[in-house]
Image (cartoon, rainbow, N blue to C red; front, top):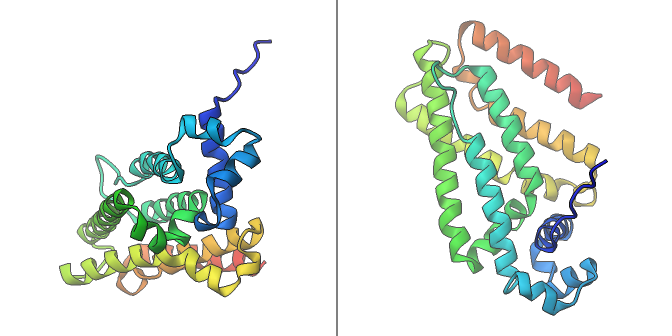
Length: 222
């Protein structure tokens, strides 16, 4: 059998750094800690990355590539409530995978100009997609809202999604890294974001929303 090629040191540094940042918070991890965990010399680490910001920016570049693939609307047809549901699931899974950006967001943006500019663009893109999803449902007469209400909904959806993990961390910091606890937290986040649409949904879409919500709430109670 053909052996799998070993991962390059640079890739391993990024993978380990992401895990450490997620588990302990980016401000609490230094390049010295990363080098020690990698069992390499600081000089070897600096051969691949100039400093910690260089590592953070490289991880953020990966995050940007992944989120750009998610921030799209269906082509060739109008969006429906199931598209919103899927979009939220994918978004929260990605947020969890790169959760240190969201948990340490204010601190990171105050120190890193590149992240500040790019994260603003990501937020604007999220709002644009959320607005388009709502407008599509309005066109199908499954959502009754005017332009101002849709703008407010789109913004509120993005705000809740962006800061949901921070809210969950404050609620129960001791269980923040437990997989089961966070799976439930992400499920609650999806429900809270989608609930922004609830009062405006009509007809079969409203019935489907109620069915999906009921199934979700049952899952959370198990």
